[in-house]
Length: 138
Image 1 (tube, rainbow, N blue to C red):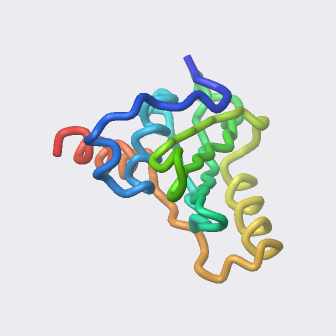
Image 2 (cartoon, rainbow, N blue to C red):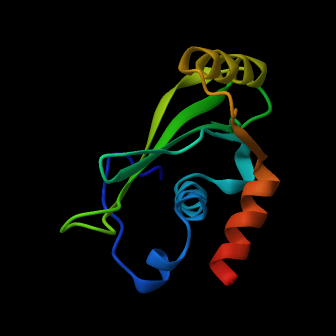
């Protein structure tokens, strides 16, 4: 089942020791059937006012060979300063369904409008599985 909303993950020492991007990938891998993830587009994280936020677009293939991909927006928020330092919140919300080609076009359009010159990091489902497994085991 897909977890929605902004439930804070339990604070564990191991979670505080890994970088936020890796932790975010683990969150995504835990919330969707990883074998059906077609691609993940990670946008550059933003730091502002003692907070770091990150966004990703996740395309998940349908159960059958026919149909459209479910498109999710995944987000995280990490408190970097203050009394709640280390607080982690993550959410993953289904936004709609679309063919995979359309997902890529939408991501490029968002990049242009946001002025994100660094671009996104694109991961295949296999890359997400490998990176999240490495981090879970290492």
